[in-house]
Image 1 (spheres, rainbow, N blue to C red):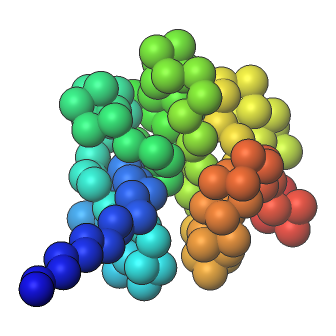
Image 2 (image 1 turned 30 degrees about the vertical axis):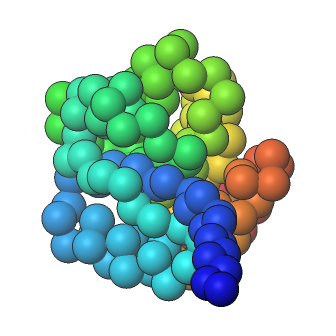
Image 3 (image 1 turned 45 degrees about the vertical axis):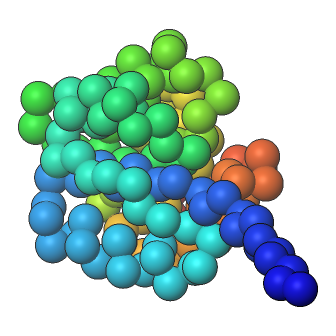
Length: 140
């Protein structure tokens, strides 16, 4: 008698990385994929491409830069949240300020991390996945 059991693999959290720097996207990919429950489902190098890739890939979360060519992260977030209002977006930028954080919150972004604090990206992603916001107070 042969007994076949099938283990159901839990679905991984699908993350889209958006940054105009290929090096930074690769570093973020390595950092995020250290968590076995997460996978990077795609990458974009500007806001326009991020809007399109969000439609195509249907990610569970987006980590997005602010300053990018064609469409910045806040503009892209506005467009993305218009179509996917519950999709969590974590802004990852070197231009952190109280004004930018306020603008980010108004565009549907639920968290922000300064690029000088890259280690906090994982904390930010975890917070957003729990349904919380994550605006690092020391960054602004």
